[in-house]
Length: 436
Image (cartoon, rainbow, N blue to C red):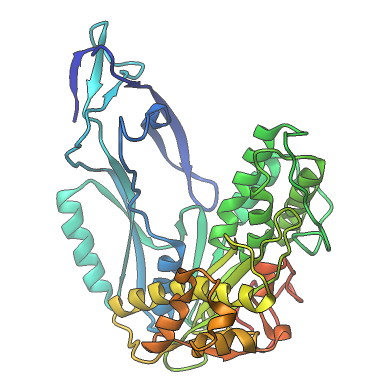
C-alpha cells in the first residue's frame, strides 16, 4: 500500500488528515462509524505532481436511466455495502505524503505510493432474485460486504420502489432539512419560485459579502440540483457565476433558493409509470437570448425523458454571444444533441433498441430550418464550426428536430428559472417532470 522513506529534498510533500463520520440510514439510525485517510491533493501542482484526475463514479442520468428501465420491466433492485474496497493502479508519478496522526514512523520520513480510488456502494438489478442472491454470495466470498437487501437509501437519497405502480420515488428530504438547519433557514418563509422575477445579477469586481460563506452555502445546494430537483438548475448556475465576487443581491437570491427548498422539501422525483409499452427517449430544449446583463450571452437548457421520466437535465450559459434568437436556439440544439447521443449509447449498451432517431423538441422554426438545410451560408458562416454538430446527428438519423410551441416547453424552467405551474408536476402537453 505504501513505503516509508526518508523525506526527499526538493519534492512536494502532500499533507494528510483523518476524516471521521457517522453513517446513518434513512430513519436516522446509526449504521456504522467510518474513518477515512484523506490526502490533501490540492497542495499538488498540475504537470509536476500529476497530469490528470479521474473519479470513476456514475452520473445521475446513468443511474436514473437504469432505474427507469427497472421499473418498466419490474426488476429486482438490491444493494450491498463494501466495507473497504481499494482499486490500486501503478502511478507514473512519485507521490509523497505526510504520515497521518497515529502512525508510528521515524522522524523525517514520509509515505510513498498512495491508494488511488475508494469504492464502497454497489447496486444489483436483475429479473431474478435468485441470481441476485447468487451474486451476493459470490462477492461476499471474496470481499467483506454487507447485504442491505432491497435498495432504499443510496447517496443520501431515499429510494421508494413501488412494484405495483411501476415507479421509483427519489427524495432528499433528510439532506435538504439538514442543509436548511445548517444555515438557519429551517423556519424561513416559504416561497413558490426558486428565483425572483426579472432579477438581473450584476457582476462585481470584488466581494461585498463573505465570499467563503456564500460559496459554502451555494455549494450545499448543488447536490439537490443534480440529484432530484431540476427546477433549481437555472438559478444555482446563475449564482455560481458570481461565486468569486458575491454581493448583497446575490445573497438575497441565494436565500430565496433556501426558502423555496423549505417549501418543496417533501417533493420527490418520480421515475417510471410509463403509459407506453416501450420506454421512449425524448428531448426538450430551449434557450433565451442575450439574457445576461453583464456579457449579453444566452442560456441553454434541456430535459431528456425516458418513458415520461426525467433522467437528464442541464442549464448552461453559452460560451459565445449569439447575434440573434435563432442563433441562440441553434447553439442550444447542439448542446442538447450531444447529450442525446450519449444517452442513446448508454441505452444501446443496456439492450434497448435505438434504431429510430431521438425526437428533440425545440420552439424555433428558423433554427430547425438551418439545422436541416446547410445552404444558409450567409446566415451561418460566422457560427463556430463545432456548433454544426447538430447537422451531423440529423443527417445520420440520431436526432430528429420537432417544432414545439414555447408555452409547452418544460425546458423553460432551465433557461428562465420559471417555477412549475403546480407543485405536483410540471404541467403542459408533455407532463414529464413529476415532482410529487
